[in-house]
Image 1 (cartoon, one colour):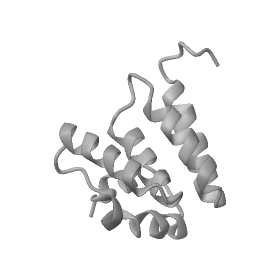
Image 2 (tube, helix red, strand yellow; image 1 turned 90 degrees about the horizontal axis):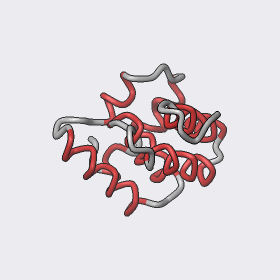
Image 3 (spheres, one colour; image 1 turned 45 degrees about the vertical axis):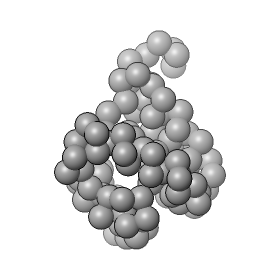
Image 4 (cartoon, helix red, strand yellow; image 1 turned 180 degrees about the vertical axis):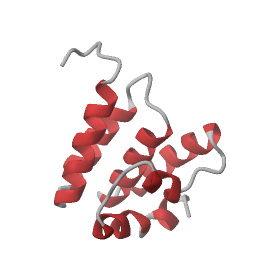
Length: 105
């Protein structure tokens, strides 16, 4: 994949979600931050970063992403994030449990 690919952020975000689902939270956070750093990353990609960072125990960074999301979309919540993807019930519960910690309840 080219570093100039306009959809690279989606591949990086997908990798982050895969690591999160496997319980590899530090790796998930690293890939999510890479995805969110891409110029064309949008709210759902930033939400991947916020949630994965929270899973890795990096609440301050997660909250910073939440602030960025809310600057773009003030009403964006974890429910919006979950509606954008198809997760198992277990993974959905995992992400939902973080919503209060990162300001997306």
